[in-house]
Length: 242
Image 1: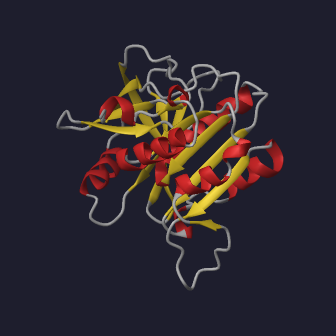
Image 2: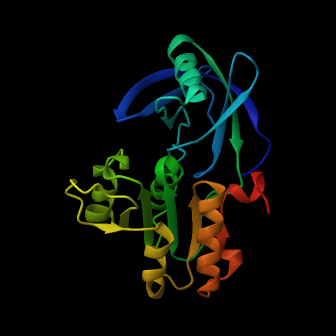
């Protein structure tokens, strides 16, 4: 599903800070009609000025389609995100456009999935993981989540649960562990961790969420290692082509 986006009215069912500077927002259809999207797509929040602000939908489509989840990072100095949070806190009804984006699981490919997220890119991958459960995907699902510091894993227990109870192969990677932290997991650049595991990833489709530099560096390294370029998917390819 990557068809025409439509404008919808939603209510903010819940808005809460879940860890550090990341907010979890639950939006509910204001008119009782289903919100339509595919796992991995994003929506645009329309600000009072008319400007759109894009955020990945962090939940897989539910049968009733009445609610969806967002993760919004609002660190000090991030004025745009602060404006979005203030808008969601102060308005009874908010206007959104959805669905948007071509990097999604309209259906699961008949292949292993490698989901690669930097920071709050986890939101997009969370929706895909949940969709793979709903579709009883028969191939391995790998989740690589990279953050600068261990505190960046803002939903730390959820992927651990997926790994222990659902069979997801979870690979958390910290690029800059603090000297005084108790992090004893993998560290370094995210794409290097994936390269270390390349023998386990044959035939996989790769879905990447992060900055353009991160996405292209990851894809280039993996293509050079022998993975086919056609197996890579990211929204970056559409909004920041090279």
